[in-house]
Image 1 (cartoon, rainbow, N blue to C red):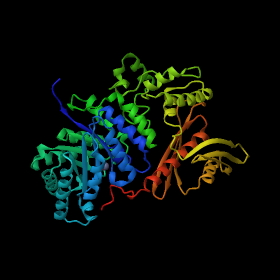
Image 2 (image 1 turned 90 degrees about the vertical axis):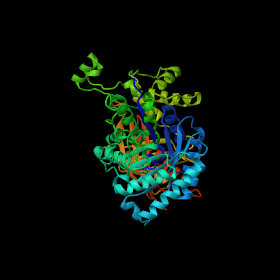
Image 3 (image 1 turned 135 degrees about the vertical axis):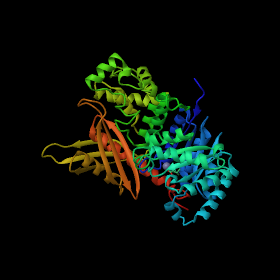
Length: 518
Ligand code: KIV
Ligand code: ZN
């Protein structure tokens, strides 16, 4: 095989992904995801926005200390305070990077009220400052795709002269299209002095559903870093999905001869973990990692698949880490069988964790004759975390035609058990009212969604609940054969995430978004 150009994969699940409303992850969850990204071969992990909050700072620092091979990057706005704070967090990494940015389009220049010259000066000062701290500096002109070309060339040149080693070209609002995305990179390579000495990155949002296509077009024009997130997690319609660009480059290597360092067999597992910890379920028909991505239901497809899998498959399920077997487990299955099945599904458990999961597996197997892969995945994605403030310990609902709908509930809040009986329009409404009376809060229910994990009336229900409180959003998920229990657990999960966000913004540094211009 001829030597192919490498395309660096820059994952921003923990920064752009996590800053999307409702996708809050705990400190430990961030560390776990960073570990999986590192193991999978991600070149650069954007671990967070250190000035945003004490929690963000602590997570970026801990990820920096833990990382084995990935470069660890933190985000900073164009001011010394942000950049210094970012450096304090990433300097612990073997390979640190500072990523600083400023909005350069006319709309963004108007916010800090800087004219073109003043902004150019600010870019020079801040990139030079970052470069004095760290020899790996990335600079982004936010909203680059709506910035005047001449001005974009001017500021990119300034950033390169000031020492930026990577120049990222964000399509912040998902406005560009493939041909334009390619032309922009080509234009910068042609016009900017020094452009051949740095790496150009592409950072696309998916508002028009073109993020993957736009990223690949930029690579064909000369970009050598793709910024992306697992499952395309991110604000609004999300960011470029890592699994899509990686598999597109692999499957269509004949027409896009570029290499990434990603071990694609780890994609499915990390996708499940991100869905679980962010509370953002993956849509069934999502490319590469959706539940239906490799399912063939029509008779014609199934027949073709049995004769030759290539008839309808352009990649094998194993290539993305999906095990072919769907071995059914039951109540007689032992601990060793469970461990091996979970490991096949990508979950490696320590002895203590296995003990806890085995108890929950037995409970499930008692309620459900056959436990499928999807049931086990749902089981792994739920369960109380030790750090949870609120835990559901007992629930009994009464409902039926012509009957009052009531819920008797016990919650453990900060280790203290309290019980209540509440009523409502239906069993779920009664149960949610019980939660509200035991744990007073002003959060509003924005989304309540129920889906069956497998077929059959004994199937588990996965429930997603999205809550909003003072502009903060949290999404909770749970699964259980009892839909009301799953609903309450999902509600409690969302509440725990809101509590975590409240605590996170309670530090010395107020919680800020990367969109706040200072
Ligand atoms: O979309 C965007 O412009 C960003 C920048 C902070 C790089 O995420
Ligand atoms: Zn972005």
